[in-house]
Length: 272
Ligand SMILES: [Zn+2]
Image (cartoon, rainbow, N blue to C red; front, top):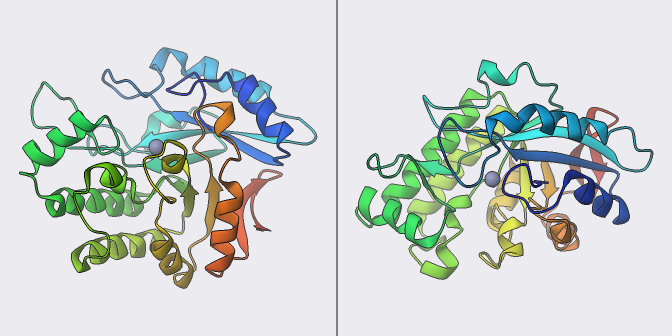
């Protein structure tokens, strides 16, 4: 879950109360960790200590366990999940994510694969000359590098690069080159031992018709014995639980029997 410390809409208390009402036994807060430059989705660095304090204060509830986490961007030479500066924080878990790719000039300190359409089109058309293959190659290289680097527990939205594909139709997921790039990155996920999140945030926003990663990739993940976890990527209380049942049914159909969650402070495989 995100909350109003980053780009989420609810307070930690409101997010927690909704999770509790829905009967969740274990929930995690994973606000976007501060970046060293201005942007519209991350927490400001001067709020980090208050965030840690406020989430920690929600712990100890008998029905719904609360875990303190951060979603950490991977931007080589700028910020990574294993930077020493996170070590002072009492984090229960870290999500490692790729949201941004190299920016063309000073006008754009970064360009997100999941940002507004106009920003995304600068990335696709100006940085990559309109070549989806070039941009997606770069994206999955980043995901692979992130997995090789490690220092986190859960890989965020594996194929986020597809977010605008429903609206803009810039590539076809069934093409051989795409499958090869995605599967090579999935091999890196398997090697790293991290948990792969099954994230329905794109569905919540109407951006995608299905989860990250796409079902055919989850089938491949199952063959590689990659542990998974169902995540709302909730940015407001009403996001919680919406497509949970869809994910559960999908995963069971693909042969998954368990998901890996934090329970009593230990990573545990629980029945779906
Ligand atoms: Zn994210």
